[in-house]
Length: 277
Ligand code: DGL
Image (cartoon, rainbow, N blue to C red):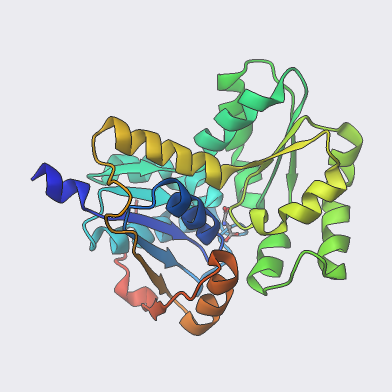
């Protein structure tokens, strides 16, 4: 029975391709785990939607993954983590790990007394999830926040870090951050690690970038190890991907992110269950 649970997969979802940056980290940290990924490409971006819609979509995504009998669910989307994590944790019979707490914990570890920056979607920034979590972990710390709504569509379009449009948009969003010089900058959206080279160049070497997805992968590893549910390397290591729209497109972009061919299957949004949180 315990072995069955151990052999269960990890379910991971995001609004689109950003969560694959988390999958990449999970596969590096936990090479023996089977992963099932859902990218809700038909409804991306989540970051401009209302909290109610984000919660409803997140519940449908998680319900779809529950069909694979996972041992753990990763909400590989900061926006869904900010708005739906508590509700998902209360509703689902398995552990649910989001991005915000692990990202904030890692940032605090490296920040020292300096300010901590957070860049994220509009919905994540307006939720105040990061400032609240950072205040809990390091009372009195100064938090600088910036919403970067154009970055998700830019990344979903497959634009690279050297693209002049990417650089122009980043320069505009990061202007204030550059002035205030945070010691750490949380990439509070799982799409942003795909732009980390350009963000790092603009911020300079004094600012350490924090990949919330990497932090979450470490949290997953800890959780599975503590609950004796981790699989040793050489076990599974498979990746099954689903997209609610245009699987060929996600497959192409996934190949760039994962550095290997990734087959993506289509699943209609009407096949995700529609229960509200
Ligand atoms: N990757 C999601 C996040 O981490 C993007 C949200 C969106 O779809 O706008 O927030």
